[in-house]
Image (cartoon, rainbow, N blue to C red; front, side, top):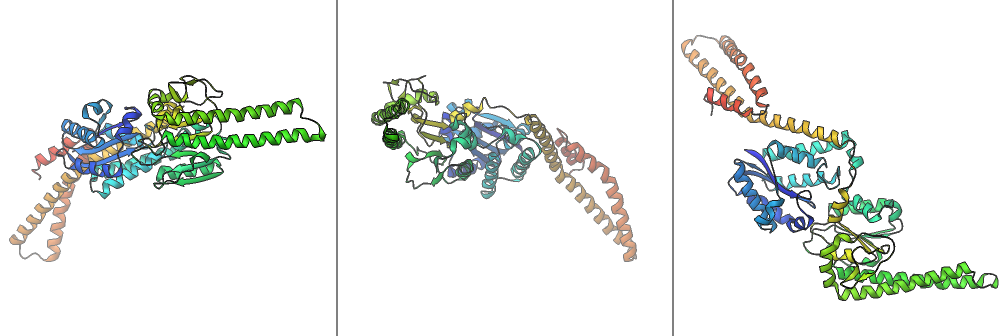
Amino acid sequence: MSLLVVGLSHRSAPVSVLERAALVADARSKLLHDTLATEPAAEAAVLATCNRIELYADVDKFHAGVAELSTLLARHTGIGLEELTPYLYVHYEDRAVHHLFSVACGLDSMVVGEGQILGQIKDALALGQELHTAGRLLNDLFQQALRVGKRAHSETGIDKAGQSLVTFGLEQLADGAPVQEWARGKRALVIGAGSMSSLAAATLARSGVAELAVANRTLSLNVYKRQVVSCTGATGLVLTVESVLSALTERLAATAEDVRGRSAADAEAAQGVRGQSATDAEAQDVRGRSAADVESQDVRAGADDARGASDAGSRAAERGAAGGGAHEGQGPRDAACPLGLADGARRAAPLLHLLDLAMPRDVDAAAHRVEYVRLVDIESLAEASADAPMAADVDRVRTIVADEVEAFGAAQRAAHITPTVVALRTMAADLVASEISRLDGRLPDLDDKERAEITQTVRRVVDKLLHAPTVRVKQLAATPGGAGYADALRELFDLD
């Protein structure tokens, strides 16, 4: 049997394909059961995260295994095999081991060096153990992958380059400002209650947000007051563009009311100082605040118009969602895209920040096109991470991975010959017992002490004869191609 992995990830497939291919927990269990039901596979495990789906199996035929695993992935993701195949990658034996160890160290992550993948590998192993689809090979493989990942993080500085997807996403929302400075005073809402949501809540709390709320399946969202991090396992949208527009409208109304209150207070203070009228500077400031009030009202009206035309905006967002970066200033609106601005137009500073870490997405992609909203999702994170600097310790981690792959292969090859060595020694022990029994028949007058001494002598002779060959065959078996030595040993000694 040999290790095979077939999968797709953010490196091989666009986010739109990964989104469609996402597997919920029940689908993963069904995929594992169906994999074991196929002829080529004896063991199976599935690693499914927000940016990868990989099916691992112990197979007896390479080509049949690739065909079967690819077909199973297509069937369970609901994507046609012909459409899915160009995005699939295949790794076999040592290359499959190398791939999983690299994944465990964060070398294959969207954010290089991130440590969340270790928890996801642990979950994949636990599911395989629970369903009894992970046998000796996959148990050894995934447990070793966890150890390799922990070693990489403890022995190198990969953590300096690596960070959680949550932290990276918040950095993108902050748009160049320090996250703690950006988060200070903000109110945040985390949608979901899984491990990623827990990490998001903890990260936001450490960042210094003023208020933090968590909502799960029974949502009662007061979104307009809060910046949002969403990472649920839902298969449909959690926040539609209509919900975002509604929240933004309320937010703008609150902002305009605050501006009006501050403008009136400023005017009154300017007129009341020593009985004098406002200075030119104060008057200018009041006029500026009043203009901000007018602008807020105008944008609120635009948001109302946008809500009524959200379908058209959604179609426009599909054509240009990636163009929704936040910039200072404001540009002309696009009549063909009522949700927001024309492509390339400059945007106002955002009032509502959305971070969508779910796959498939929780937040309507059309929100990219809504002015005063900044949305960062898996797709935009993938684009941003392409330019992220690599840590100097990445090369060291690669060396660790290479060493661990060699060690794992040697251990597996050595383990492969162990049953053969045990069978050889069992055969030798049976021969000794048989000859001692014959000796008892020929020399019935031997006392117990003499019989024990003869038995021990024969056993020592057999052990010494077998010692060098069995040690040497274990050493040879640990080398590439070493399985042939076990075959030769079975053939030479007629072992079953």
